[in-house]
Length: 290
Image 1: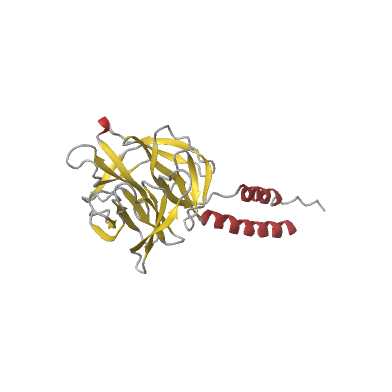
Image 2: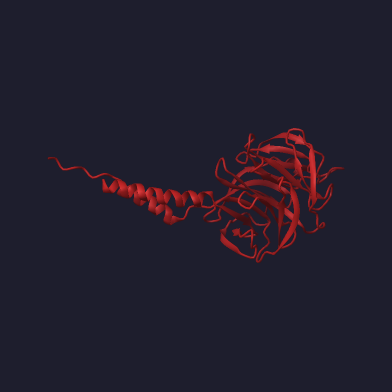
């Protein structure tokens, strides 16, 4: 029976360590060349995971984590053209191409991109016309399949929805228009009716300010990279869970981080090795015949 006791003890220990690792949040970011991790409480602490090898002159504009498929997903564009989804390997940084968004004659600009859970469990995206009176105003909101690039309309809210974030604790969906082309606040969007509720101003100017957003369940706050500068931001929530204050957390070193998302940490190889060891030692020995 000794092997059973040892196996149970090891399984309990490793289950605790791996469940802790899998549950822990890691803030991922994308630079011109690499997938990185960032300490949200000390953004000067940036660690390079590895090169993503995205096509030259393409920018990773919107990063989100899809827990249904356990994938770190990115909307990538060359300026405002050739929009396509990619997934990132969280251990190596390598990006893999997924679905391309239909964009005949480059008629549209695709902007806010975020996984929304709750009863929806979809990736949501905003779209703007590239010409005309509403050029660049991304008021139309869709759900999109990152694997095919196909999408269907959800709602229209009359705002310029440049960046999205989903508060998974309260099932609240927010958007921002960081260059203030329509409004200067962070606002909650009702994805059924399109109605918006405004909170605090976040706009800093037309060339820099809070850009891609990410919600931390651990810190219960919204974080933002800067769309034009190497600066990191935090939006604190009040007791009601509403955006209450905007803080500049300081400068981020190295290459500009264009997009961010929180995702579970990848299990350490040592943890996987111990799991393999358990499988070996848990095999019972045959008893000798009497």
